[in-house]
Length: 520
Image (tube, rainbow, N blue to C red):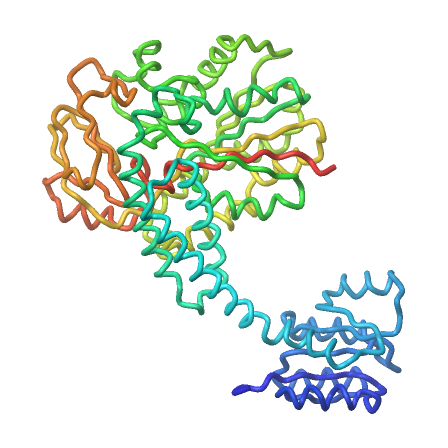
């Protein structure tokens, strides 16, 4: 070993352990000895130590007392307790004092070596295995792109790639992050072609189509309403699969979790996809029944003022009778969120609760507009970390923890669309009344290069609003974003490397639906 790991073995009967110590030295470790807790503390103060083996029963300062002092000095230093005592209470005390592992005497050399490898070489060994497994998966995905993939195979690819991206976050030393980024972009090129070819056929509600936004309530909410005292439909605005997965880690201790996936409608933006969820209708059908909704621009807040009414009418059309009033709550600021957290258990008296959580969308928009957030979250990996930090300390997590105490509650947690980090700007043409969205535009004669966007000549072909006139749509593919020719370079640079939504990518379209039930 080029840099020998330093091990300190603390035992008042150290002479009885010479065979183990010699064995570790032969394996390339530097092993030092101490016969009491005070000497051990002094050695750790004066030397860089990588691992400690600590006898539990020593005269004077015992193992647990010494362990506490070691953790005060160096909280991250792994300490392995070695003892003859098999009492459960002792193990609990040791675990409570943050012991790293536990060995019962007599210990044998192979047992000790295994512990050493776990703490001193475990990261490298795991990294080597991760690297081998990832390269194998990378090659399999690359080969699959040569075939005609189905919508469910695309879901599998997106899930696999996302899980690997989270795994590689834990091993930046492997240098595989850029490889994963490049493959993600390659996949989105092919995915955009796939969507362009198949999307219109899905809109005919044929049996071979994936679940789309307008079928989410029918597929996931309605079948569960009569099975539980209370059902929660929670829609987290603009949540990507990777963001859900970092949240899921925190929820696994509280819930039994299962998942499914669905496809967002196009454009993958709140006025279209979220209205479609709550109304159970395509955007063109919403325009037909609620024409006032589309008479002004696409301000995302003003376009989603009728979600409760949409859901009520959808349940009425499906002849679903609730025993009490549908409860709908939109959470857009932290003060209001804390208030909801304090009384979330009272919501369980309602048979159906719909909650919309806007904070993930706010993170995306804030990163685009705030230099410091772009510095904190310069790429997808850091963006996941930012999401994790928010969620861990959020009122939303507090709400879910409280709901986990109710065994007769079912939570259906999903999103209306994801987002993508936009790195390539392209010119878009249109008149002065054209929409300003970066990933999709509508207006008279809006245009963009076909290789960068889907051109929708007739909105009804895509079940989109016609907006009382002759209007076209363009929807960006992959990670492109639209910039008008006026002040082109200024806005090209301003919006480069921002998280946007509305277009065609796996991150925006392939969305998780998580089912949470209490473990209690």
